[in-house]
Length: 73
Image (cartoon, rainbow, N blue to C red; front, side):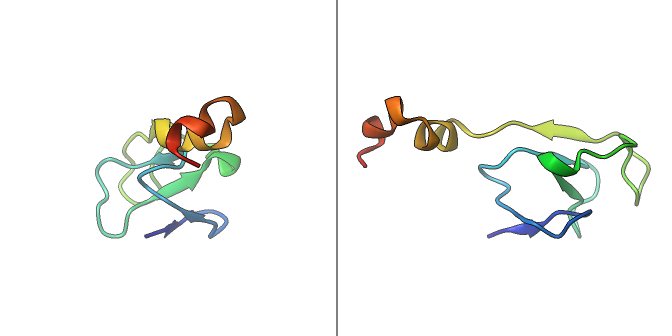
């Protein structure tokens, strides 16, 4: 399930992609993709600080040719 970036509407997979997010706002979730790094590090809805979610280990291994074979591809 993808959630659109708050700035550019690009679909983000919350389980695997890198993004900035508001830990307070749950519905709707406020996410910014890595390319749309927010200039203001505050949530536009609640004013709370944004946190950063790193790329998952599975996604990093999938895009790295040296480790892709370990995933069974």
